[in-house]
Image (tube, rainbow, N blue to C red; front, side):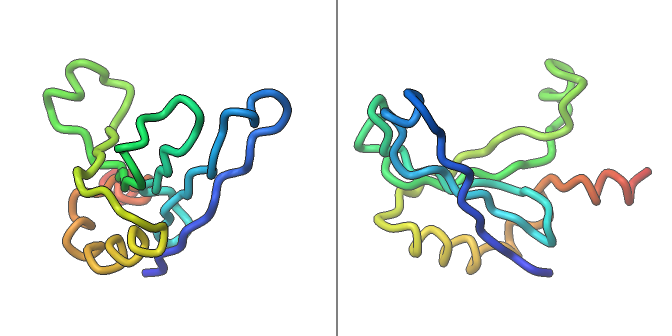
Length: 111
């Protein structure tokens, strides 16, 4: 089980004027499972800080609203002061989060 973090590509042109730090994808064995969002672009709430979002398997109620999407975003309440602190939190809690995290490989294994 290899956990990695990769910054998303920066926007270019006029769109880049309001963008702060690009978000960072959280990957498990090469599959996207979440993101670290910085919320430092021009239109964001400065109180939001650095947050962690994970892709969770959709529950039955979610599937009834949108049967085409087998996952949903879950953003954690904790606000981090630094990118390194957010990465450390993900590394420390990945085992606890893993059973609910959506990955395409789980879907393939169930088929």
